[in-house]
Image 1 (tube, rainbow, N blue to C red):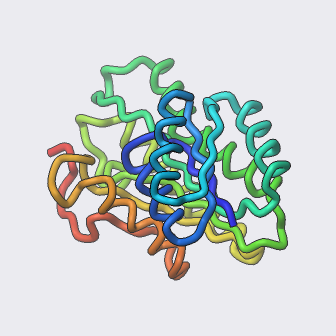
Image 2 (cartoon, rainbow, N blue to C red):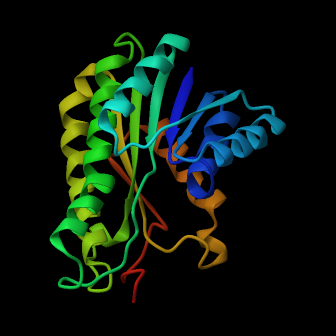
Length: 222
């Protein structure tokens, strides 16, 4: 079976790809930067993980649709999608223009919706499939230091829950990993430790949302 990881040339996305690969999945890495993709693909192959890549900007919705269709033509056993794209621009409720907020919403929410719908419509319905999105603590505890990030992560969280219910009877698992902290800010928040949550969520399939770390009482921006 094969997993597409979008937003996977470094950090959490790359570590998620490694985790899935270590569990026997073939991996297709997707991001905008071909050079970084090539380096990341080489890194996976050094760890004996079958890997390929595809350069794509997910804000180009037609391009994303084309990518998924082309990848399925190459490998009909694609059954998992991890969507790990996000613009982490920091602002308050008044500092960003409506145009900028719209651009960020397109990246953080609409591109995720488009990729998910394209994946569902194009992949083999006879395979057990999954889609896991990367969420953020700001979607639960809005921060005045990250107003647009908060609202977009809240919107993505809402979509993940509604999509989960919509496709459950089609043997498609939809989940959300909510990262409640800043990557690299502590030993606990290293990409490899965060990444394990994705496979655990997929393997158990018993809840929509998994939190990492599990117990947090305040915003990561405080």
